[in-house]
Amino acid sequence: FLMMRRPPRSPQSRSSAASDVYKRQLPAFAIGNIVFEQFLLSSGEKGAGTDIISWVTFAVGIINAFLPMGWLNEKLFPTGEEQTTNETYNQARRNFEEEYDRENPATRDEAAKEYTAFMKGYQAANM
View 1 (cartoon, rainbow, N blue to C red):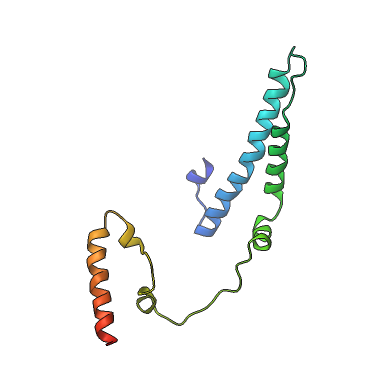
View 2 (view 1 turned 90 degrees about the vertical axis):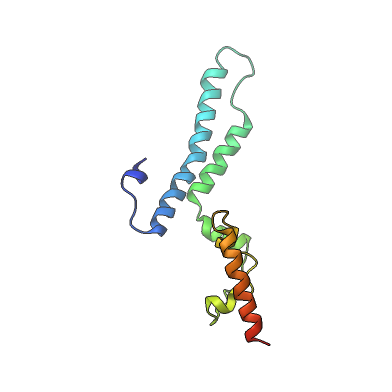
């Protein structure tokens, strides 16, 4: 709610604030489950108590909240080095499998005509 009232200034800080909110949701959900199971379900029932899944969820949530997930993702899923290119957008466009305008239902027809004209012009220039 506070993010909507006073949004951060840059898109990076906005996405960082949103991911911080998401990081807090899993531990809060798990704590809610633990409290519910501990106090409401176990009152008077023999053998009723906190389920192991709630504790595992809580542990995963705490790890996710405090571990540097960017670093962990880089270690688990190596992407290699980024490749720089000197191509312009129009030079690289012929290799794109999809573009936003061609996939957007509102602009699909016009974008398909424009892309077809672009490809015909590219083929004519390279023959």
